Image 1 (cartoon, rainbow, N blue to C red):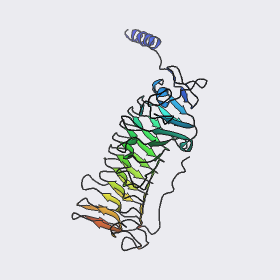
Image 2: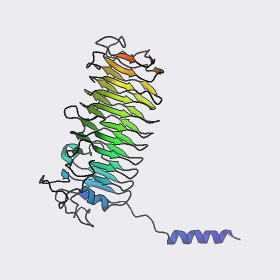
Image 3: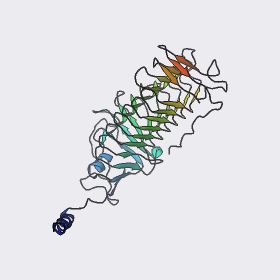
Image 4: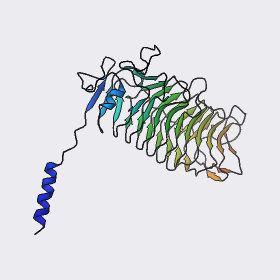
Length: 342
């Protein structure tokens, strides 16, 4: 006898509970004007920040070509009409922010003030950039900054270019992220950690870091580092606790191609190319094992078909009583092909 009543109550709840609003697309343009109602195609916002503030979870912010900056006219005055109010803070969960012109045509420039980061992602499941729909991010105001900083879980950072004197090109302290098809180029060897991931369960896939003091620094259980290129840095890859390091290339990094830290547990290491590394000290270290234990690094290419050894091959450098198993070795170069960033 109670069953009909339960059904009536359930139907009543369905009637009175509101449905979530459908996701919408908000537009940003160099010809737009910021307001609490901007975002429709007919009245785009001028700043990315204003469009984010006008958005709801699950919406998309579509950014047109041009320059977006905290100092658009480079007059040293910040906070003028249409300018970003410092860092672009993306604090709306599930938001997608992408460009129509790609990284080559869309510049986010941070010149000064505090905080010093360029993009700060503080909400979960945000997508910043996509393949051929990313941004060029430059921060000029403070070298102790991050171009893109993610502090929330499930964030995706894809298809972006970072250049200039910043300490962290992409920095993440959260879990379960995706960092893919980004390119980071340092000026004059600056950048002590140009790709930093400290969370767990993230995927770092098909990124390039060039000319930095350190290329990729990754520490966290479950992180997968695959198909990345570290070229011409000091240390190409600095790795501690990870699940997989595969199909990457460490080329012409002056200190070492990849360094395994003394803490944490290294995971699978296979299918990588180590070539031309260790030139600063004449050590030609393609892989440096600092774990103090035994590591298996089989199936990698060491710059010569014969495996690790003297130039032209790279060698394995063991320290702290570490040992590294390299056999069987790969006999051909497996340097990954990088995606074109447009």
